[in-house]
Amino acid sequence: MHSGAAAAAPTAGALAHTLRPRHVTMIALGGIIGAGIFVGSSAAINIAGPGVLVSYALGGLLVFFIMRMLGEMAHARPGLGTFAEYAALGLGRWAAFMTGWLYWYFWVITVGVETIAGAKLLQPWLQHSGIDAPVWEIGLVLVAAMTATNLFSVRTYGELEFWFALLKVASISAFILVGIAFLAFFGPALTHTYQTLTGDGGAFPNGLQAVLAAIPIVIFSMMGSEVATIAAVESTRPAENIARAVRTVALRILIFYVLSIAVVIAVVPWRTLPVGYSPFIVALNVMHIPGSAAVMSVIVLTAVLSCLNSGIYITSRMLHELARSGDAPKSFTATAGNRVPWLGIILGSAVGFLAATASIVSPNGVFLFLINTSGAIILMIYMVIALGQIRLRHRLEREGVHLGLKMWLFPWLSWAVIAGICAVLILMAITPELRKQLFWSTVSVAIIALAYVVRRRLASAARFEVSP
Image (cartoon, rainbow, N blue to C red):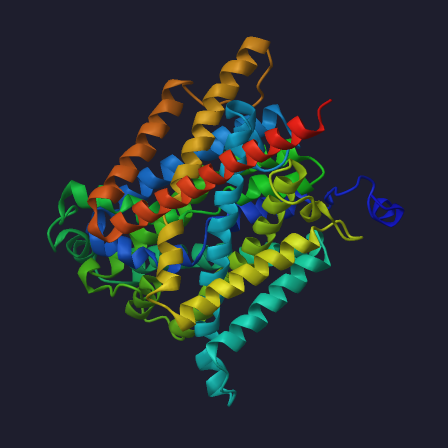
């Protein structure tokens, strides 16, 4: 490295460690609250009816156990990096290569999706103000703003995400409290609430199979809890911060997902909820809360911007780690004077914006293909994490390493999680609406696997050429 680069940071290519515990805590709290619950929950309710509560409970349990596994590995080997490195500890370098690149690809597409979602939310407001801007221009401004936030410093990212998460947590908590007050004191009698819940086909109107079929949608809406394990690396006490995030994830899922959805289906007959429209707005209108649509639009926009902000952050850190381990070009290890991986931030933002542009130019062609190729990737990544945890735990126990944070009922519960992921993938295979996502996501995994094989062979050939 040049001397100027060396002077920019204590260690060449090192990241900053300026995130505080409150940043990591709120990133963990807010990471699981996205547009998936505020809008996407309508699709899950449409499939399972009131039985969707069981879908959320089962999906939340699966995510909770994955987080516990990540917490165990991070607590045993703190400061290694993202979960890709922990998967590599248990399974080998191929696991880091595949999970790293798959996760990067998944979040790049997510950046594109959230860019368009945010632009479409803002466009009517701007038109009302006399500004007639196309979606792509609004999207470009949003991406540029979040890119600038990430380039400024990791502390700036953490601070902005802290306030985004605080607003999301406060709003969903307020919704739950208002809903409970309405059901208990200001709304119709409890007999009417019971009729709303069970009067249209009972608790499981479409059968138990529908409850299981809604689980993939539920899990996709819960993505983001693992972001805390990535952000904690740039804090002063990564092991402690990860452990704190892991221990609170079950409570978050219970409160934010199960309770909020319970309020929705107790207030509004489930069959009247339109798919693709926020069921929270419908419920607030039924409770006669003035200005509910405008308030919820602001909250959804906050969730979208939070996801966009975190998506750019995640793609840059994952690419930085891949480069440091030799699985991506070394140029992506470069950090600026404030120790942020500037090149990875710019690349992630640019590719994400290209994906957003594809949704405008070819919504049913290129963009739909991109969505399908990333649809089931997170489940496959969770599978690798679980397998890596099992292998690493066995090794740590043989070495006599004391584990301050453990996965319960090991190894049976870990294997049960893997069986659960397999069951969800099978559900996707037999569900016509999700089958295409599973197929193309599998193709994505195969392409990354082929890339790893090619990389290994090229590396072996290079070593052979330089050997005496």
